[in-house]
Length: 188
Image 1: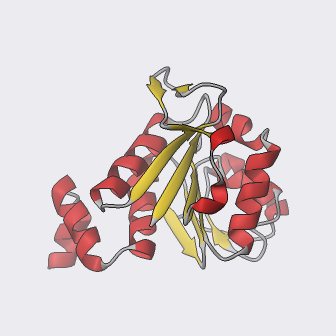
Image 2: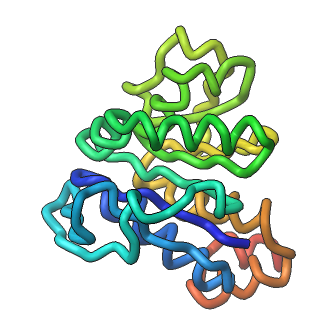
């Protein structure tokens, strides 16, 4: 399973990095893709980091899973990229796993992808015009769409991606390695 997470200046630090961490713990390949002209990306909390690839150098169709983290500025920067939106539309329409958290599901909503779907996002980014069924849940999976509500929902968001793409053993290993409370509830 090959994943790509798209990082634009202003992305929410935890939504990007916790997702990368958890998917790698599940032995998934996940590339951090810079939407900038350079590999350097600055998060919404001013953390400067280096992505692994430039968007201009990859073909999103080569990936099984596409992921957008949120953050107000990061989401605006992602939404400003017509090629990225076209890639997400094509990916979603071919039935491939399409994921967004926090403010980023609003991009999918503006594209009409949330229509008649159950989804979540940061509450102030929800719009009636999305035409779907908003859920006040940490993370929601509906078919090939996974959405997360915000930074505090990142672990659940990443869990949903792992649950959709890996077996239960991989998920249990990730949870145990993180000492995630959910693993204890499952054991009882």
